[in-house]
Amino acid sequence: MKTSSDAPMNSKGLWINYHDRMERVTDFILKNLDKDLDLMVLADIACLSPYHWHRVYAGMKGETITQTVKRLRLQRAGHDLISTELSVEDIGKRYGYPNLQSFTRIFASHFDMPPGEYRRRGYHTVYDIPSSERDAKMYDVETKTIEAMTLAGLPHKGSYMEIGGKFEQAVGLAIGQGAIKDMVAMIGIYYDDPGAVALDELRSFAGAVIEKGQSVEAPLEIANIGAGKYAVLTHKGPYGELSKAYTWFYGTWMAESGLEFADAPPFEKYLNSPHDTAPADLITEIHVPLKS
Image (cartoon, rainbow, N blue to C red; front, side, top):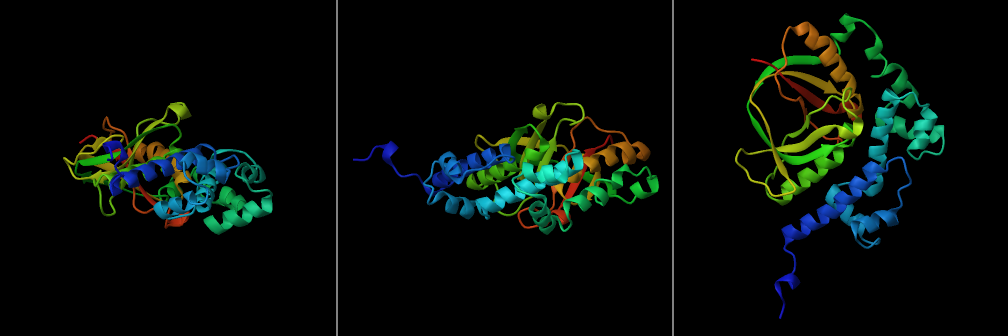
């Protein structure tokens, strides 16, 4: 006779169990993008047979482990090109490319321009030109009144560039719990200023919009976005360039707008996904709360 502990896991429980294993893999990858990633080690982290775990991963994630690693490394490399003075060759080596030629070829196929050009004339240098006339053409900004929103998601602590894994985990859990069914708005709340808070102390929240009053189970948490007036900047391009958008938004547009901030953090709404959208075509809305 079987005891309750011998009973097979139902399909929902099995999905969540496998999802948790895959998220352990994603978390490890995000923390070790600049290191060699051994597939056998990843299989161990997933607690699955090395013959089968990558098929489970691909089936649940919609991309192979190789595609995930490549995508995340190139996103991080783009960020490094913008925010550091490391040479292009050193950045390529940092993320596993043996020489400048191979890094340049792969980077160009992903971003539609070679890394040197990306750094020289792209989104990196244009912000360094002190021209208010040119700045005015950088982004579309408008004020909007939005309704309150309830999010189901997970808190994140550390670099904002590493929050992607939390979004994937949060969405998977929310689907598994039945909190969301169809494609919903993905939103990130960013509580701290990276210029004033240490990188490993930055606080953020990765979530998906759910119906008001919808309950969720741990480890998912609820976060609320208040109704009110917001300044909304529309950014098109890789996530690694959002820091420049914030600098222009806060330092130029807000200073000239005559508007005042409300006492609440900004949030980002993602209108498409890096899973099926080229980095140059990603669209992000940055929402800054305003006093009424």
